[in-house]
Amino acid sequence: MAETKSREDIDGAVREAVIEALALDDDEVTPEATLMEDLGAESIDLLDILFRIERSTGVKIQASDLGEHIQGGIPDDEFSDENEIITDKGLDQLKKVMPQIDEDELRGSLDANEVINHFTVANLSQMVAERAGASS
Image 1: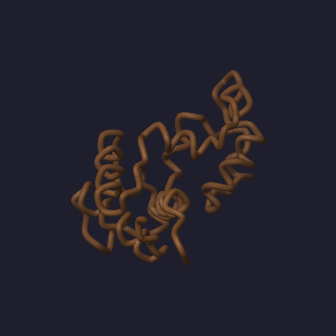
Image 2 (image 1 turned 60 degrees about the horizontal axis):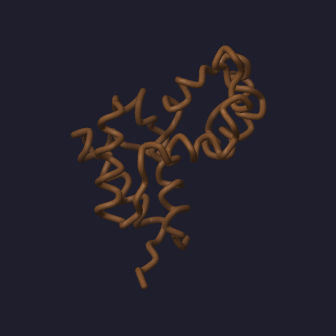
Image 3 (image 1 turned 180 degrees about the vertical axis):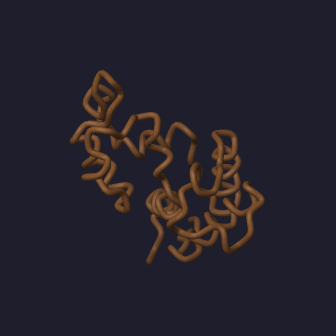
């Protein structure tokens, strides 16, 4: 049976994966930093980060898993409207996986294609910890 990793181990592994994949300095990668906007990750970088996390933790997350995690199983037509703006139901879900967002500020204006820009290092760590069944 695989050893359960602590949340501290998971956080460290995620942080290290981000630092290495994006060639950043230690002090640039904070839990609050958004992967795309603050740290400059692109889609291909996310694949590299996820691969590095799998290698160091044994937790396999595919790029498609990120979207599913963020959307929480809500069908596309309920998550966003016909103009690709996130609905109230979608915002409620986003608040669960990205508690740092200000849903009042984003209500009625968050484009579905921009959601990933709000995903932070801490959000990724939480997702990995949930998948790993990490102990506190």
